[in-house]
Image 1 (cartoon, one colour):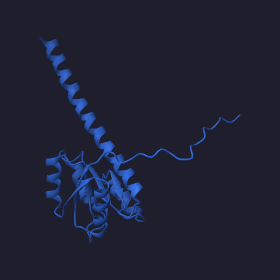
Image 2 (cartoon, rainbow, N blue to C red; image 1 turned 30 degrees about the vertical axis):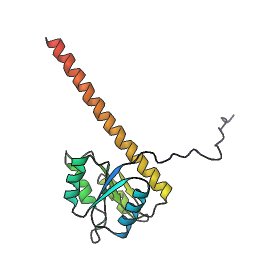
Image 3 (spheres, helix red, strand yellow; image 1 turned 180 degrees about the horizontal axis):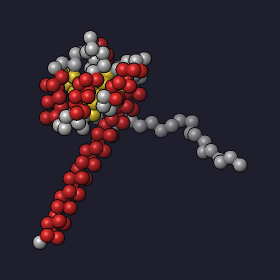
Length: 167
């Protein structure tokens, strides 16, 4: 006998965009970046543009930006070298990195993920999908921050217990 399947509701519940984030975009402002920026701002997020990547990285580190978007260089394609470089440095290892890619360029997307990208976004994504992907990134960022805070709290507790045992 086959197990009974639960019927799927006609309309699935919709998650609304309730969490807003701060984004830094590194690289030149292409048409795709301009569209992505406009869409993110319309969804309530703040977006800063930095054509000089390392200044933008410094800004992201100084202000606890939620997501760093790596734009395409016109002559270099997917910015995987910058992505890999950011992942290899202890101070930038935990940044959420989003590479702006094109929908049909599978090899570029795979290369970006292998270099350490958290997500690859197409500036042409439907607004609902862009919102859902951004919300997932922001939830991941919050979970990582919560886990770090809990790890610090537990380390303090462990240190105090160790000190008490030694005394």
